[in-house]
Image 1 (cartoon, helix red, strand yellow):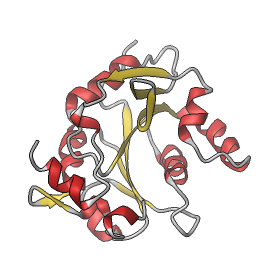
Image 2 (image 1 turned 30 degrees about the vertical axis):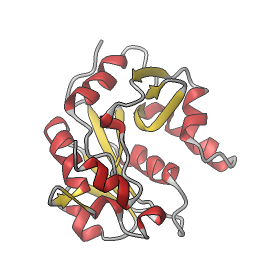
Image 3 (image 1 turned 135 degrees about the vertical axis):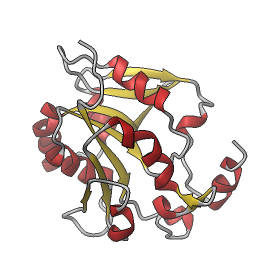
Length: 196
């Protein structure tokens, strides 16, 4: 059985340090006159009744773009896996769709590709792949894997990709130059992406 909205929660990850962006909070950096997070909000808001944002600062600004704000329990920007664990814990649906806050060209067709690759009957994680490179921040994770991720975290694992690839992950193959997957990490990348 295929997944259809609104059977999934959405987690937008905005908890990074933004070191290559001069320490700026990337999700709030201006893109085409609006915060980056607004571009993702426009795409996913119509698809779910459970929109979560993981962030560690500027929570009041992010709160206008979600149903629930999640913050890390560990200080010092510990990495995305902590936010993902909190997202899976808080999610009210059986699936969690995961996107980074700095990929403003994500569109509904990418969401549809991830949903089409998933099966409610045999729930396996789904992850975007470009060539031989997995893109773990573009994933659809069944909530039943939460204990697996928690155990991996407690054992010292910090890589979502490493965990999901050990659990029969389904690949959604995208072109190497797919603009929907373009992350903005530097001021120059922000400038370049304005031309799309």
